[in-house]
Image 1 (tube, one colour):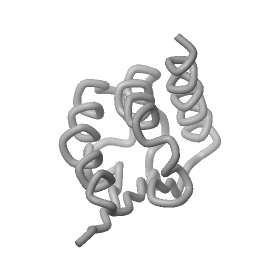
Image 2 (cartoon, helix red, strand yellow):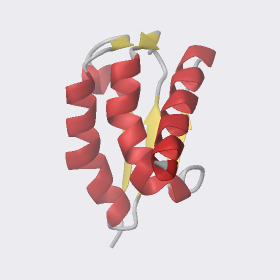
Image 3 (cartoon, rainbow, N blue to C red):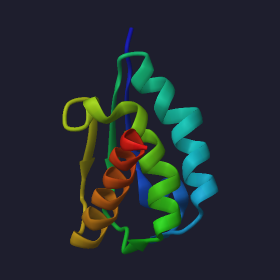
Image 4 (cartoon, helix red, strand yellow):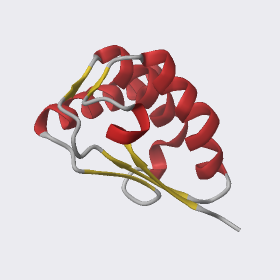
Length: 102
């Protein structure tokens, strides 16, 4: 049976600014990836997040996108994204795509 996970980034990381890439990567690897691999849906809610570092975006999302890109928009969802957060997510997606070329 698949499960659904909604990650409220503000409360999960207890901040309005996501900066710890190691923590982001660890969470996506140990919590998010298993839900997706089991056929579940993950929604990241960025409401209340004012910014993030490249380190967080790349460590958490580029690695996730590299393995799960085909799920974006179907079982890997994003909401409450400010224009800045959208830019960071787009950059992480571009990094994941660039790894396919290498």
